[in-house]
Length: 219
Image (tube, rainbow, N blue to C red; front, side, top):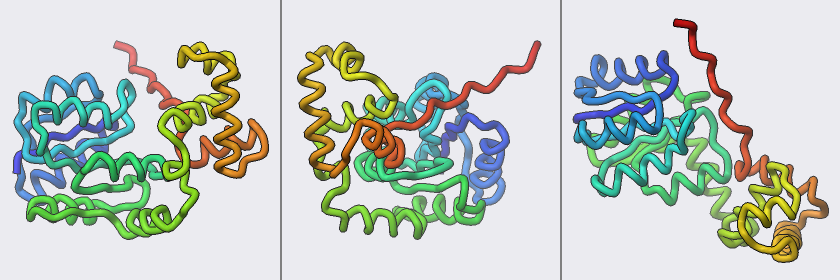
């Protein structure tokens, strides 16, 4: 296969390159360390498989994938991440990708298994991910099952944390509308306070601290 790699950590990108090329005998046709680089590199490289870190310093990896797939709708994709939570699990399921690797727990040999499975036309999702998917599917009050898209957006902003007035200004609605949504969210999820709502947003991954920008070496 022709493989493009999008990963902002240079050391891990080299590990990916070696696993794809030296270990499995595929051709790495493009590499990128940011989302903006990926939007330039991936379409011109015409890969069969995109290995994509979804936590990039400048863009959301799923937005990169959506943009690339506007021209390559059937592009196979292996998503990699340093963690997964309920929200990420939902996004991976909706993105119709062929595999997932957790950088914190999976090994290079599992990465090789994932790439080999995708080459065969199969998929690869590690056991902890599949167990989390099954638990999520059995949970009747999972946030994505009981909250509308607008309510999920508001809950994520509560996790910032932002006041009702600031959320209203950002969404261009009235503070009263935000307050009504917020109370509906609390009722649906059994939450008792704004602080508890903010903690829930962070715990399920609707709100995550921003990626720290790494200092660049002096020229």
